[in-house]
Length: 339
Ligand code: UDP
Image (cartoon, rainbow, N blue to C red; front, side, top):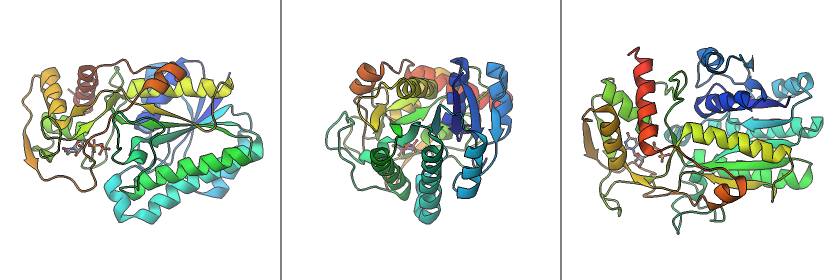
């Protein structure tokens, strides 16, 4: 059985990917420092799959701890690296913390791979590397634009680290550029767990719907889009998780066309903030309380993916609809509140 290290496996996308990996016969080892996740997630993964993943709690930015991990796990077939800080606003207040954590953890992993002959890594990247692209839909060949945030810059820098490392060492990498992952597992046992006030649109909407927040602030309705609100490519987290299994198999079976290889993970459809609100109202039967406020600093106006390369080459396609995404997010919110 292929043994896979999933860093950040207790987190939002990580936990959904662990479930898909286990259901596809992979043995999973999770490393997570639980800085933005809860230990209970492991039990919930167990409830879904019947398998409790092996778990180690430590910080991958620590070179000694990471080196020690690799001396104890020399038989890994690959790594999926999710563990990273991800809050755009926070990254502007604590840029050094973001660079230290996001860059050092990748470097420490690559050192371990080099030393122990572990060849395959799937890296969590983001469409934020494109900034506001000149052409839509955006393809993988679009250039990196100057980053809007330290967070976005760490994703660009990590992709660069991979690019040069795979030239010098026998490492094969796939970078997956996520668009906007939303929704939750159909079991409602795992989902997004924002600590404190959510930054992202959908958790904010569901928390407003359930009464934890008074109203949603819609950041700007004067964008050059049909309804004036900003447009993103929202993708169901389960579709996204499944793409990781496909990418990992591609690496293990040596089918990559380039190294590193890069794929956009989106649906190819753009939806505005207002359309997301409408979808929420449709699936929940509620009226959402919201107010239009100023644009949020650093937001781009619109982005959606060209999914051609992922669909044709990876042989993967996002299948779940916007209403399925919003319904699963709402079920998850209700489950969190015990309803
Ligand atoms: N957004 C909003 N109100 C919120 C949170 C987000 O209007 O409370 C908008 C945001 O301006 C963007 C979209 O929703 O246009 C998605 O934002 P999110 O933070 O979820 O993801 P991002 O695309 O910024 O990574």
